[in-house]
Length: 190
Image (cartoon, rainbow, N blue to C red; front, side):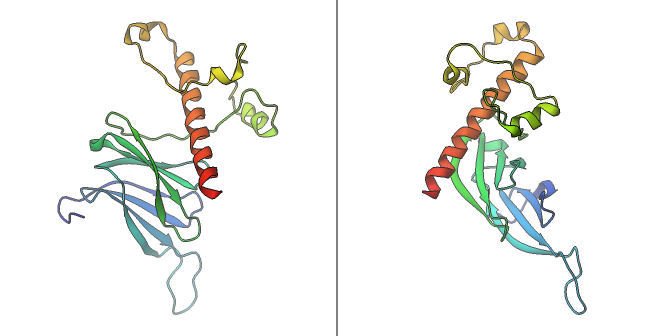
């Protein structure tokens, strides 16, 4: 890793409150610190940070990163290499491992993880999301064909597409990506 021209891109606390995560531009890494949870005489004070390690982001200029809602996957936007890389996060040790999943995205600079709602299920979890305003109209004939595996952008139609339609399209894309990640994770566990 280079030791010059290293700048911080982002700092955040893991949702568990047990880890602080920092992205390093120039060094092209994520550094993870464990947060001391308890304290007793003669030992580290509560809130003290100890380094777990630093991990290469598999790209250049880690502009942004985000944990999925479970806190078990870290998604990193590497702006200058035009990639998004996915890492598994060990909730016990704080270490991350590259999953092998990488996506080509032009100059990614933000990652957002949204809750996944299966609009064709009567699942209690989906009903809970609806309380917060996530509603999805039922699709047409073939349920399996309503989730796109490829989305093409036509700039000539951009003005005719309203915000609600764009949001629905984004939700479908996110649902498909989460499904793919879930399948990959299940395959690796078996």
